[in-house]
Length: 405
Image 1 (cartoon, one colour):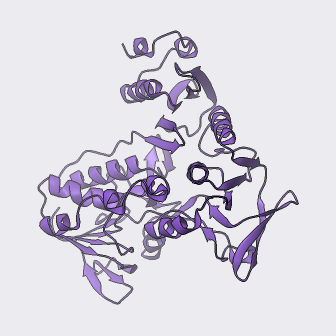
Image 2: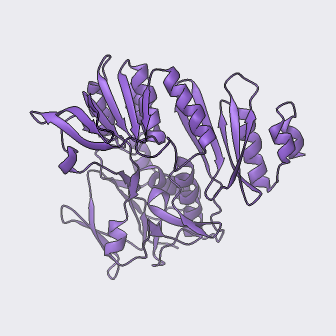
Image 3: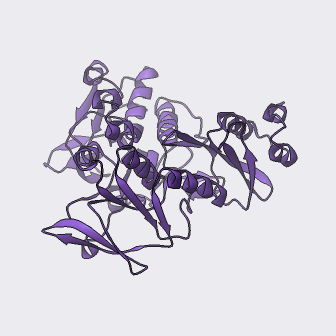
């Protein structure tokens, strides 16, 4: 494939696509369109090291600004694509300008779900954490002694709680489900992470939803909860998941269903248009899923680049994830979708453990809490198709290496 490539989205997937094409010596013209006013950067550190003041923004960027000119990648920042014209192979920006393409890549990521204005979602002091602007606004708000309410007990909420406690805030986290991490992890992993947060002084209230936020002079001051209680708050972080940015794809007639539907080559229902990263819905063991991770964004984009450059290898996801909270590193290999059995293995260090997931007897994923050996071993087993002996897994005196023989 040759001709101009237009990339809509300047995040992890969009950058990985452009960088891989250049690494493959594919010098087709590339235009990358980004909604933010800064050059492409890593998002995960925003809610951790950047918010803590331990990392400058320069250290978050993928490459210096000069890299784009040197590699003939045109960056159009502060630009929003309003419409895709498939017939004329062009995209129209919010300012009326048009970019023509021979190949189009949709790498638009996802948008955090927000609270409706009817329950106080539009009050000052209510935040989501996704972009640099969000983190910059939070830096001024996260001060010792302030009272923070976090809505949502997923990874975003728990990571925000860890940072806030490090900065000296009084933190309450509410989760509407009966436990934290319900959608993404086992009860055993949730129990371990809950205990860690409680040891650090976070108040976690499960089976508790938000009725409404209360404000004075447009600023949030309190939260009325589903159990009838009201708590005083100074700021709120909303971590209730993200939605795929697939409106443009839907509007131009591409197949969409909880994300932009792609095949094993990252192609959409239009062969001239690819999609990758958090906005894409791909096949995983016969099921349509969105893999919301840096690893998937990079790997899928690089696989798409190889196809664009003339290759024919399909993308075969090998999911892995991570979450840093306090001095705890949670590492995940595989994807636990559809699990029906778990096995817990204590780690060598105090407080470390791993949770192994099985579906119909088949090993599909592992969560490792401060247990790098279990993570590495589990990842190798998944990549090699090894089915571990459960008796060995359950016995911490047995070395995992024997399972890799």
